[in-house]
Length: 409
Image (tube, rainbow, N blue to C red; front, side, top):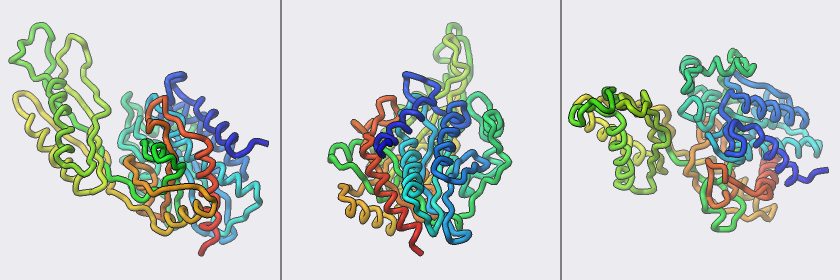
């Protein structure tokens, strides 16, 4: 009989096999074959714990243990299972694995909750395939409409609907979930930073999550021959984009208060070695603990872009995602700390500099979140690693917390 730590390691190891880049980190894009492999594994483990399994019209997975109160709202536990390209094995799956193990403990110990317990595995949190991010959680609460969802396409022009059908999912299934069916949501995530490791503390109780926006900037110029177009006659979209990108960090330095800005994705067209680029599309990710800082930097970014318009150059910006800073539920936070104390597990309060599905759901239900340490603070890379012993500690805390939440009126 495997112990909890060994079961967690087995889950993580198995899920890590579903990658499009073996030996070069985890690449698991939404609605890919790697998604399908992981999805089938998660559903199988849900069934083994006696959960009733279903999927919604986005491909989110739900495993439900019915409660004794008829039509009662669920205490949900989970996270996402997609990845960034060449990411790690823990960002997302650690939270899904923790949720599976909480359900397994309920099942093994013969617990019959008053309120249902529901394991949730969400799609496209990273936004690596269809952009924007947090798609599964935004969709299930109605922040991503049916028409907008259908319009989303990946970089190869494949739509969400086409991609879903390709792996056997049904996009016609119900999508929006009534908030009245959600009593609470608990999420475990790796910290993705160095604080817990440096403090040598295994658990962080998340107090608040930063606000963030993701912009998509388009710079248009004029294509031309690399050898025959004089330098003073060029409208080079890539040169202009590089000048803009190089000035973006200054905007957040001026703003201060921990505000950060990142350009992580850049596409050049037509992308030929001997052709002057006529279009560049790049991402701008802005984050801060204060909404006013995010809004200020958005405005400064727009002003910067406008200053480069002219002389054959056009700029445009589209806001793909905007989420306000979120403070998580005070009662649930207190309960997580209380259970940690009872179990003798050291913890500290911490804020999240990354966005999570928890921040979306916090507007619709009572949300609590735990962090575990990330080795060297690394994430979104193959070197990402967290200790299964810390995941096991989080499972214990969530198990005791879920027992209380599924019993409390």
